[in-house]
Length: 334
Image 1 (cartoon, rainbow, N blue to C red):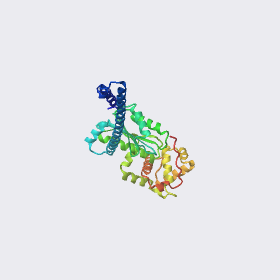
Image 2: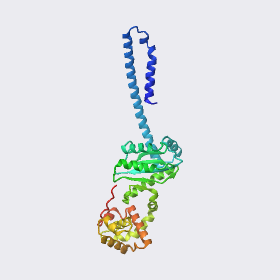
Image 3: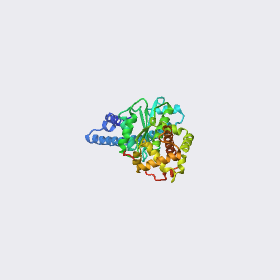
């Protein structure tokens, strides 16, 4: 019940009882009426204070209970625990219909997000002003800000991304991942894992994009689906770079920058802060060591795939990759 209704009922009962109070019925003088009225007002004041205190305590208890239930539900949902019937019943409480299609978007930054924080409150309020309560659920999970939305409602992921960026004020560590639309109970888990994977790819590959969609990075997920195969490809193609003077680090970094620059040597040199002749020399050295020619489409594709795989796997180890004369590419402003 709303608080105003409780107070209204209480005060109404007070004035309805007033004519029948013994002090009123038996009073013969104004002084007696005044004394009785003062006593009644004091009693009503104390009882209303007690009512409000009890109401506020009950509200706090209910909020804590709701938050605990919400956190437990989110954990069970995103971990994919298979008590489908109970989970579907609990999902209705939070406006989700697990039988339908859903999309999950996540935001990750240097500082973790938390329930009740300014970012999560702003994002939730912003989305609820545009979409139905039954279309979205905003929560946090392991420091990530998570948005679960109906796959049939358009524009939620875009609105989520805009609201997060508005609050993060150009934080360079912010990355937003958007999973694909999937159906059913397992669809939420799958979309969440896709969104989390593309954020991980963004950090490992130093991608400049702020917002990344799983549908655009399917090739990376395919690469990592068979770890043994991609590891074998990386070792077979790039293994000879281990024999380079100073290790494979500088050559591997040059390859990665070269492919990121779409094969333009001048752009590669600018990103690495080295001369164009140095880039040309390193590419020639890679050809000599590996036997793969960048001018051959098939061999170029093998080199590019192996280079991506090496970055994703951390090949040949952080120390080796960082060796040589590596200078990190400047990040574009965000």
